[in-house]
Amino acid sequence: MKKKYLALTVVSILTVFSLVACGTSGKSTESAAKNSSEKETATLTVTDSNGSIKVPKNPKKVVVFDNGSLDTIDALGEGETIVGAPTKNLPEYLASYKKVESAGGIKEPDLEKINELQPDLIIISGRQKDYQEKLSKIAPTMYLAVDTKETWKSTKQNIETLAEIFDKKTEAAKKIAELEKEIAAVKEKATASNDTALITLVNEGQLSAYGKDSRFGIIHDTFGFKEADPAIEASTHGQSISYEYVLEKNPDILFVIDRTKAIGGDDSNDNVAANELVKQTNAGKNNKVISLQPDVWYLSGGGVESTQLMIEDVKQAFE
Image (cartoon, rainbow, N blue to C red; front, top):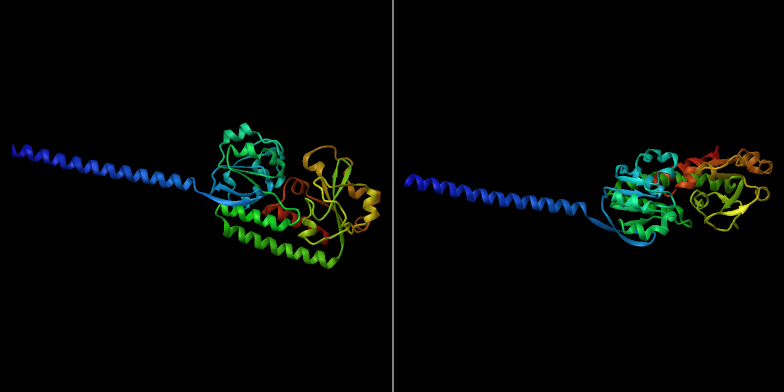
């Protein structure tokens, strides 16, 4: 009887220890899962072009329509988070992202596809602003625009905002410092030369001019090139001009963005440098009719990599 009693006692003790251990293990597992869940759903409040917005910190799945934001995310080493983009409208320097899911056109997001992707965060530009409310029902939707009156300042703010979201402040600060050093060097040369510059966009033979407060105003307000015509009206689509106008303003430097090459179409009449009136300008006589990378300038801008490419483009004016 004593042996039987002893055996039962041992079994009881072991059972108690087992239950305690299981309970502890269960609580530990539950606690770990809770901590993991909290970490995954951590949020922060940042400022976008609309104001304050709550977004996930270190999002794992991002749909990006703004190519400037896409190139900044890429430059910060977080490109693997991109699950969707307007793949048919990506500039060549972002061609590697054509492998991600197509999220629709650059002006018309595919809401059904985006919903299927279940992103943690969506980033848009002005081209998709009309869809912001609908996109916000799928995931937090951040609108990052570039202020055409303060191009570099707003670009820098957008870079810093993305760096905060992805916890890459140190990396962003380094890249911003490098860009500001190059910007200062370009501005110094442009200011010292006192050469006048005219920014034009050609689309199937038709010309438009863009001034200081335009979508391409970075050439004037950030890089320091003097305007050939300070009276150009600020407009999203530019001021329609003729080749006679170009000759009248007689710029020392003529920057040309070929929209047709950026999005497709008939570019047979887009050779601005070959125009007889342009050849009579200072820019034409001195080989200063400079073709800017159309896909960068028309489809992107406002990011780390696009700003660097723009700097390299305008440096041609000093060659």
